[in-house]
Length: 183
Image 1 (cartoon, helix red, strand yellow):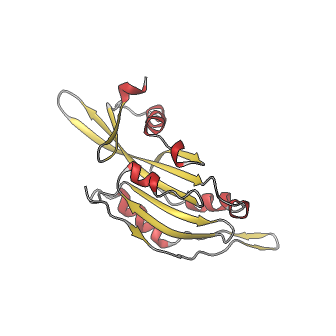
Image 2 (cartoon, helix red, strand yellow):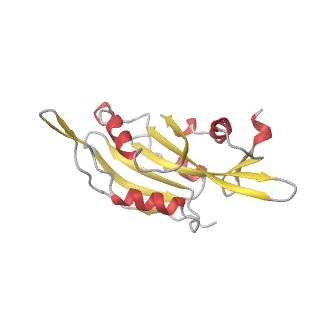
């Protein structure tokens, strides 16, 4: 599969303003909704979207999309705060048919080298972002890209349940986890 990367730099958002007794929430740029719509469309081969966030400026800064779990992890910058969604396909095979059901995992990432001044706005940014993805199966918070592992995500998805137990969780081209290996 061909990897498609879209980066839109310096996408502005409304800053969090404290007006006596009123907090005006941040606005997630429309590029985030567009990336989420593309990710969840049946016509796309994208498997993830990431939006970086400047906590001190209360701004969502860029939107990155692509294919593959390892590729997604490589795009997480230890100097940045990021929010995102990635697709994992639950593959079920039975005697008469097989099914592939997409599952969506939301994540928040605070890089290990993010300065304290950036971390201040993390919770407000997370709250603003999490209003946008639909149909999320599980959500994960992490501080290191190596903390996001396919077996851990597969276990969370398996525990989230469903009528049909999959035999494999497919994380992208050549990246899958057998449910039997999780025991």
